[in-house]
Length: 341
Image: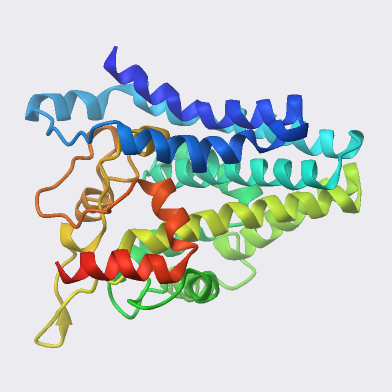
């Protein structure tokens, strides 16, 4: 029964539905839930970092229940996204309502699309690869797994990784360098893969080209069905979702670096990612917050990720840390003290 806690991950989509159904001040329900209720709850609920027995790790890794919890996000995300875009086209919204609702869609895409795609993107089965791409499509970030798996995990905590924030770098500067840097890296990685397989640029093996076509088709379809305003809404929601992701990237590795030994970077260890055992964020984000273990063993499924000893620990859960990161002076004050320790 304790594993039913992961059903809480669907509380974010539920909050988005509430936002669209009631509108008015309720248009901000999803925003308030993620960035007010969860941080407050995490400040009260005790941290949990109990390790799993070895036998339980194997059983949980093979339990398909945890996989289906991820798969269900595909129809949930598309149903709410479709409803939201349709609602934009038919409802008479005041400006403040529209802002709250488009942010709600962005949050939905960030937590239940990009985040789930991050988990599924480390898997090899064809239908899980398909689900990954379907989830990344409306986020306009289909290149993410290309760069993340082949670039970020290899170069994390080094100057070669645009997704690792340097000490003293603000979140807003990081957004620019990370988004542009990862996109460029994804094309470089794709180019190397094409050469490796002897394929030309206009080949079905050129996933980066296909991703561009798919995303253009998605936005084109939205425009054809609903018009320019809704096209713009889909574009804004997608942008919010990947900036949410980049904010998570920012807090996950901020200021952490790997040492060079004989001209080569040391192996990735648990000390090269910030960890968080705050319960609400762990559950809602499918254990993404146990990021040290994820980078230490990228093949581990979310349900068996653990809190590794001596991992750098974030002072707050993910939503609270993301809020703090939007205020660079306060972020530096808190995190530079943590880095010294």
